[in-house]
Length: 441
Image (cartoon, rainbow, N blue to C red; front, side):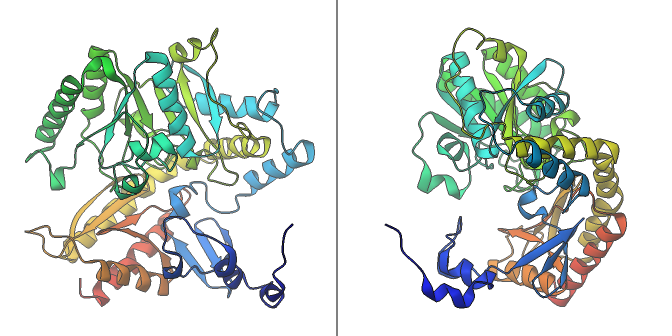
């Protein structure tokens, strides 16, 4: 059957016109978006169709940890493409085995096997599946302040607005997690916030019935929801409660993993060991779609004699695996995780806190590594959120000045690639300073 679009011959070299004619965009009212063309990039910089350069404080979807067009990752993909471009998951493949090894070595001791997926959503989907199969229970507890992906169970585990029109998966329970700046527990200190959040979690477990709960699924540091770095003992407390009631713990490292927080995994800073770890994004910086679940040995071995009821056509796709291998090796050789830690501590943290001292509409600054938020308020005393029109103006004026930043609700997210230099980070902070001054904020 099929049909032609003869009118498209006039716009065949016009990326924006073709996009508007044929591309259906995610999370958008289609007539209200105005995509602009990006042609290439290098390091922490993107370049548009007219040659204008933008310092990237977004990492696109907080996934380009290794930066743009890293030569070692490009070479790894090219080499694999000459050998074998695609291969089903039932075969052995050297790139796949090496990628699994390099990912698993970043997990705590007792994690040896990796189930590869295409992204973070299906990573969480299969982590949930594994927890339900292992325990024989149904319910998953997750946070209201979270995002876990746009597949069936993952979106129901999500807490934000995107869950509501898509909430068809069963067995999901949500809790409030620590957020001291807007404490749901009326806490005044981090210790109070931690203790009250843990008490709340255990009460929910008891009321729901421990024997009905398969797992708790939590982002190590919630990303899209606001970069709320948890109190240092929060995850240790969650782990103790889950062990007490025989509940599994899934840590979502999709956004926070592979250098984003200045650690290989964000969980490394919190001194606990979960049962399953989901990952994606930074494992290869999105050069080829990839994600996965790292299984604890106990859970992995429970499927030695019984079938794991999950699979994907492109699980362990060779080009994706080659990109993981190249990215992981380059990140280690070039100390990219260490760079994220140093730039985060020395430049971004200091710079954003300096801006807070200067601009009265910054209510809170928080983050780790190259994962930061400046929360904007109409008034520091009331903490009322800064209005959407002003937040949009921040975004637009920053772009005009050559800086790409994401705004979510009343927050400016500062999440550059892990390869950003101290000089670039300072330049971005200075641009943001100028934008806030221009807007009288």
